[in-house]
Image: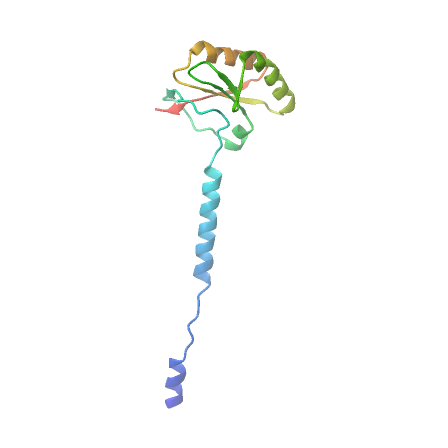
Length: 140
């Protein structure tokens, strides 16, 4: 009888691995979701105009391949983050159109920018024959 009580007292502590695996998978899934939700904005930082009908971009990966044309409040035009003259835009867009399978352009304009500059950029995009054009706005 004395031997049985001693074996009960000498029970070794065990590390349960199943709950540990659950926690690791939860953390892994969380990091994957957070990294997928991070998107890159290739354009220059501008104060976007607001629109009540602004929608989230449907397919973020699809829009990541798009060229971002930015117009700041001074009327300067940027191709992604590179400042260019509006005269260089047709050549850049035609080069992009030949390289891309489905060319997409995202226009990123400052809310205080002169509208004629934004229209000039939009006009050049249409003249280049690119039909998939998005205008970046913030939701009100």
